Length: 321
Image (cartoon, rainbow, N blue to C red):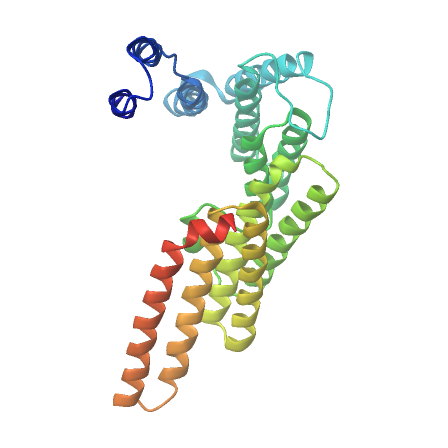
């Protein structure tokens, strides 16, 4: 309202126009779309968590078969509802008529994963083949994500795919739970990240759910960059690891400029800066530690800090240009 008052005081509008605009602004409706979506998502998560807590409290009185039957029944009802209210498949974004559709399919998917996990815990039908156990709900999640156009289930599917390969993909666990000192884990993460990036590129060219590309590329940039950084930190092939990291960063910087995405511009810059800084000080550590080495390291820190500050100051211009 301060800007409107200034416009009025400058004489650009008369008193009647000022009063009408002020009244319109005061009575303007505001959207609570995202608030409702957040509440509904939290409700689904709390409900699925409640099932797990109920199982924990009443495991001795209800019985395993009754618990499994109850979970399966609710999951089946969810899938029955979405199957009877689904829209025809299309490669473009699908907006369902019911506002509860997305949350019901999410609840059904979570309950199915709970059912599989509890069934394996109690009866061990897959023995120690946990990768195959994770793969079953993962395939269902991929189908549901594409058939019912659900980004949340797509994230669950990608996480399940990584889990079936022995990887963790959450921001914290990707560093804590993955043994990147093992070169096979590094190669697995690199191959999965490349596969996700390749599918995102292919689906974008073929216009297959192009709105899923952000999710694929988000997983890809983190898996590829962290795997390359881990190889750089923990393996002997420093030059090759740095080269791989820089290629990854350049690819996603190019992608960010094409899509005008701040996130995909900042992430490779951050990962590339960490890797290059490590390599510079690794080379300095191989020389005699004297005043000249310290001076070079100090100059690099100052120059790189100035460069990062200038980059952030001009980030908006770079992305828009």
